[in-house]
Length: 222
Figure (cartoon, one colour):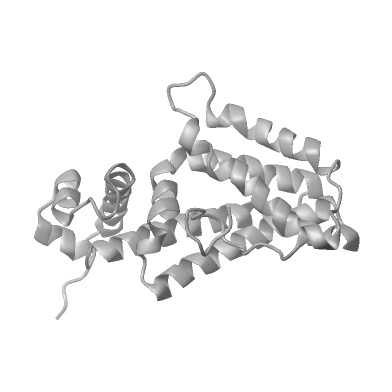
């Protein structure tokens, strides 16, 4: 008879993912060994394999869990039934605040997604597309109209450009926190949104690929 999981199995697994994300963010995926993960978690290497199959499985779980948390934020905001501008503003605020608590996971997703097997990379990117599409719908509700529809996705990607890279320059010990910057991002975006003019068809070109992150990859859009 197979041994059942202990009562603290999920908590221990979550702790392992947190520690692994910190190591991957600091040392890179390729520069981190399972021995290092086990040591950081305070468990033996055989015990570590009780919770995760291998290092690649760790990366998959970190990326998928991070995307799932972002999707849950989207769902929570959409469930409030807010008017268009408050809804998009709430999405911006929630995402900026969420990144403050998951900077390691976001760095892993940004820099190490390329090491995922193709099938798992597609699962992650499908989650990214759902999140991007939710922002694009919210933006479209703020500034609707067929003449502006061609810019909904590009403007969404520009918005993510502001949000996604904040963790690279906003330091925890600095004078401004993510909570301080969240309304600044929202105000800056809304302040410029109504001033945007639709470019001509030649200048606009094709819409960008709807990936949320991994801008260093040639397959994604900044």
